[in-house]
Length: 115
Length: 113
Image 1 (cartoon, chains in turn blue, yellow):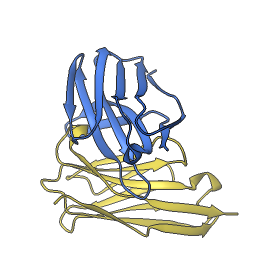
Image 2 (cartoon, one colour):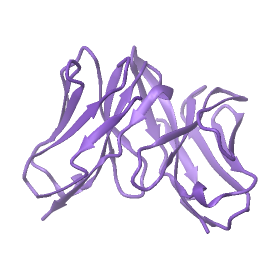
Image 3 (tube, one colour):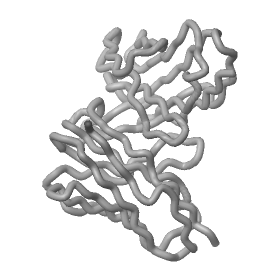
Image 4 (spheres, chains in turn brown, blue):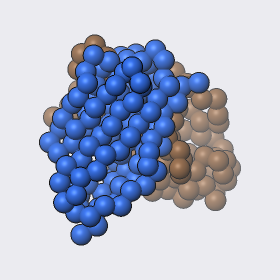
């Protein structure tokens, strides 16, 4: 069965420090991978998605970046965190069930607090 | 602008009671509508996925309905349990891919014993 691992679960970082969140998927090959952010009182916002190694699409201009060094590994990074980067970050992978039915499976999330 | 509006924002009901959550959307062109359950501090879990040709979809005690003409959906929970306490998120898709999704802010449901 497929599983998705995301870590760390919580993170407190000072403004201006770097960030690296990692996500790995097991039990499937060549998955579509996604990074979302969920701010308090707001809906999930797609940050990046990837359809293959080295292929990254950015949805929102910001000081974050993503990389996919391996088929089942997706990394979210920042060189210098801002206060506005605080939020709940979710990694996800998708399985295509049929036309119009690409199902998302989410990781357990990382609560990032930038102070 | 593509939007997904959910109501109510929060809801408290007694264990064993039924409840219905609402979702209105302006996403166009519409492809599919999904309902997710998100426990506090966890990632969302898919409950149902419906395309424009489907009117209803059930998953245990959860039943989702879709009216693509009025652009409305509802999620009905039958015989609520304490474990149903969570946020329920309505998500609308432009196409088949997961990169074209618009998420609602969710309804926070609390089940009291």
